[in-house]
Length: 196
Length: 169
Image (cartoon, rainbow over all chains, first blue to last red; front, side, top):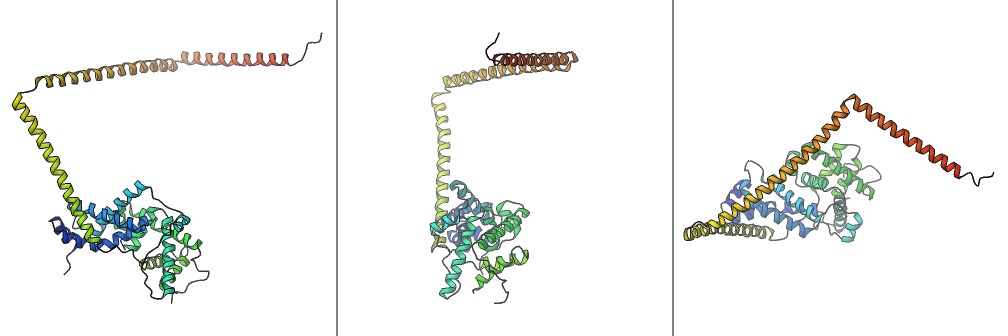
């Protein structure tokens, strides 16, 4: 039976590096993904995620096992990312800058055919570019909600905001993304049927 | 058309029409977004970095503790070896007394200035509150306004007189 996050955290506090490594492995993908949505640079995202795990370990004694480790850890990651963004003044960039940077986009593809892969990659790039153009607060709320699948209350706890504000951020962020992608021609001219 | 594309188009189509359906479609599209995977060995590197940071913190704490203990022990050893350094205490007391005097003098000056300003303000207020004072002030203002008006008239007449050209007798 897999040990719980709280058990791994307790073992790590007791001095087990292997336990902490297991805990890191459990949340590495989520952490790098979330950081990547915020800074749009894979290497930088890994650095931020690593910094967050190191900082989390230093404060592991403050982790309340009654809480979800993911919520607590994402709060640490949020603080690390905010510190970084404040230092580097990274905010939003125009699509032109993004395209000039040659952002490679996510590497994996779910579909197998080359055409489907190309289409998926194209859409993923367009969404990543659109995410870069909205406010960082909206971006982070969207990443936490739709990629990490967290509840509004958890997101509010992580971002230190009232739940109503989080809902507003999600709504406005989604609207802005839709407006950007529609302006770029991703919106179909005719209605879309629900059945494939 | 791929599922992902269809989800995206459905979301864009419903945005602004059916908020709930748009949210569901957006969620489906995001769930299918290809993840950015960490590089191989990320977990091991990170755990090792956390351990190194902890070792560094412990070394620093130990060094700070040792320095504090050494300082206290050194001072105690000096006192024991040479007795209480009287000159040091005297100098310290002299500097402290001087600083205290300067501080008190500054505070007294500040209080004096403040009192004078308050006195001036009170006097003005007292005059303004009295009906005679108000009447006097209004009179002075009216006289001033009348003087200005008279000066204006005089200047205007003077300009008009100059612009009439050479006097023809």
